[in-house]
Length: 287
Image 1: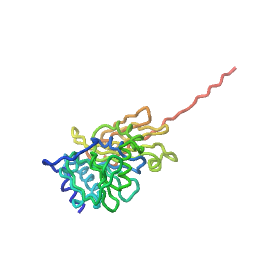
Image 2: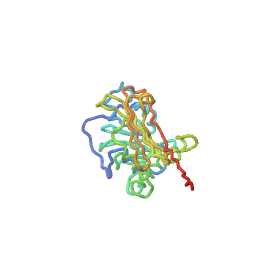
Image 3: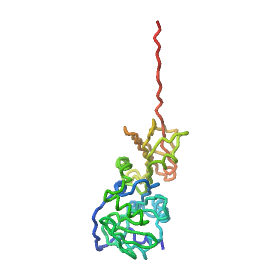
Image 4: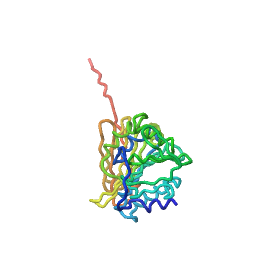
């Protein structure tokens, strides 16, 4: 049952450790192991939501959404057992039936109901029909549709272009931890986000977190604008939430933080997208 996955997420206790060749700690770094050109990426932080409690609306959103995306072909205890639990999951959608999962299980021992093992590059892929593969020598472990897992190994070894080549420089400037994040790059963003007839940006990020100091929820938007666009300020009559902060970078990246104690207000919050108005004054000398 898919629900059984949550029974062993974030579980404590001592356990055997597995052998890991390379290790990453943050989802911003995970993109450097992600093959180029996914449709979009979703990130879920269960360690973060455990601090909020199961009745918190942000925690509830994260666990409800994640449960829909963890497919039983992988995430049932008959297939995958993680001895000390799962703390983070990043799901990369390439338009395939089975996506690519990056699963933070720390260094704990895992058990996968493999039916075969194959070598790919310098790594061992544990393979399960139909077309599922897992690499346990990485942390986070990589599991999903076998051709995508193979591409991820190629990316780790520098033999395939990385999604991080296009997105890491933006993600690394979005500070703080997140309970949930969604981001995409390229043509898909240009199709989704329009200002009139224009596609103003090629990178989009939306993240949710909790400000424990202010007891408020925060939504963070980041966009890399290609034209004369940027996130602008708002006066009190324009915004329907408590706090708003914007940072614009010289290369076109803009980051907006929207905060309110009411989670619904944060979900509905939007930053103000403005454009530079450029005008030319022609002067004519009179004789």
